[in-house]
Length: 373
Ligand SMILES: CNc1ncnc2c1ncn2[C@@H]1O[C@H](COP(=O)(O)O)[C@@H](O)[C@H]1O
Image 1: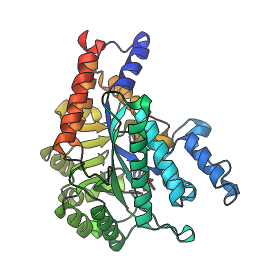
Image 2 (image 1 turned 90 degrees about the vertical axis):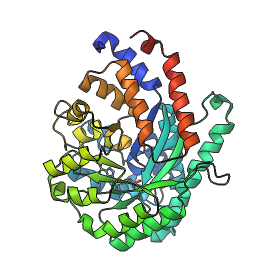
Image 3 (image 1 turned 90 degrees about the horizontal axis):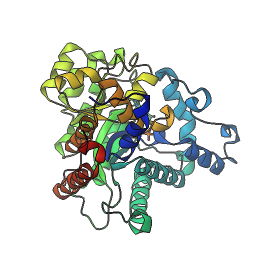
Image 4 (image 1 turned 180 degrees about the horizontal axis):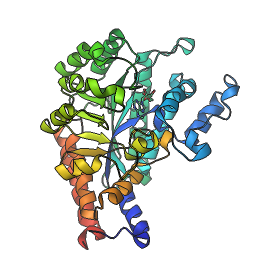
């Protein structure tokens, strides 16, 4: 077992930073960095002077954001991303930041949003996110400093249904997801595309059976599914309804009835684990109490993720570092967890999988710390 004492903290940090990583649970608007918020505030300063000091709570007090405070935050944040230009800027910055953090494959997720006053529709929202993803990817491919051997971070999109939405709205989101869905990643005219749908939003709102037809439609048409499962006590009763949709992954799974946990384990459904988010939003009491220990003990698959790196002031590097401490992992175990995530991505393109596996192998072979263990 590796010694993660203070002397070795810098080495662990460096390892987690350079480790190639997969990010599968990141909400666009929750991932906006303080720098991006500042840029967007300036852009909107004439229209919303009252937002001049808007920032994430942890920038002010460095502390936690309970779920009761968390969801209302987006009433303000959404004003900053209420038109396509702002959505593109926000997306571009988030991609830049994840790449800088060592992410090599990203599935960003976002809830399509219509804003009457700016003329943005749910479809133009999705197009803006995809256009920024394509533009950023092309820009990176052309940039000489990014001509390193593995090319640029691969980016895909998941569309979210918010628990406040009606069945009709959920169906409209699934239709949009289908319109921008690709089953191969080699289309010449669209580099980035939608790979799946998610159910998210305030876990104390709504009843999942409302959206069952929409998620069944998504599944039957070949979209991948992920759902926010069991975040709070309110969600305990709905676990099996959500698992009946046959999600390909689930988010959080912090609070489950025994029958839901048994079904999750039986189906070996990978869990998107967001350590910092869970503890800061107080859905898990402490890192020490985190159920990740149980997943690791029973060998249940999981993917370390950030959830909302802006709100919670974290990075994926932080999440791996935290994981190493909580589970007392050595470098080889950390590397294996990162590599295992490649098996849970929604893009099924065989060539893409081969490329990513090759990248992980090359990194493994070049990493001194792995050789010396
Ligand atoms: C704490 N964990 C969480 N649980 C549930 N939903 C969450 C979430 N974190 C974020 N969201 C969902 O993502 C939206 C913001 O990004 P987009 O506008 O979609 O890009 C939030 O409004 C919420 O619905």
